[in-house]
Length: 264
Image 1 (tube, rainbow, N blue to C red):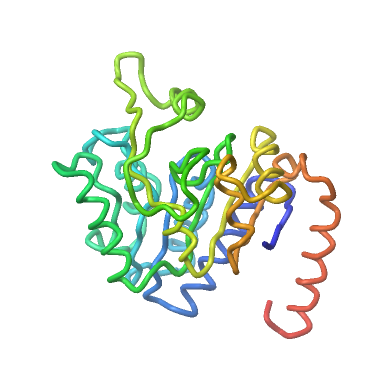
Image 2 (image 1 turned 90 degrees about the vertical axis):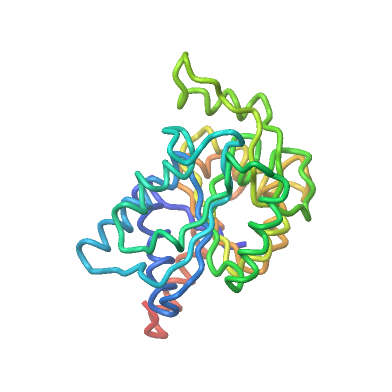
């Protein structure tokens, strides 16, 4: 696992956007796995700016989102489909028919999960998977105790996650307690995983992910076993790590090597 510690959330967003831009330069028809939540918004804003300023194109891209609330139609303001339209899709040149989000209002949600897995396979798998991390270590809606080889499925949300997300729902809105989420096993098949974490509230989850045992109690810890994961955090989110200076040293050496090789 590559751990990159940067000064603030803006630097985290720029570093993450660089990865996606390099991937598009390498493969214009890349398949991206995307995430919702507050952390990825700055990265999406950066990608939109690069699209508008530098003509960064997403015309050939296919996307698969991690999760969706079960029971919410795509036009619901709190649905993750709505979130993605507002924060990314409506502002870039991606084809609408190439953007996939689990169907929260499917008539047969269990079958919809299997269909989502099939769509990912048929697209050739995910090239770059973007993740955030919950305070309890969840990735997607794979909550603590989730099977580490799980596939896309219906998942019950923990009280902690429900409480964390309650701020997005009005007092007169019913907040879902179930979701459809890409499974941990599905995430682990991505060729590259990019996880962003910012703020002190994520520090303990980051520590458990990087330094703790691989355990279903911290689902993100499975990424220790992934062959190509980049964890990008700000100083606050890195605050729980035992030796952050070690990771900063490694990143400086990596950047120096890339510079000598003419790769940056």
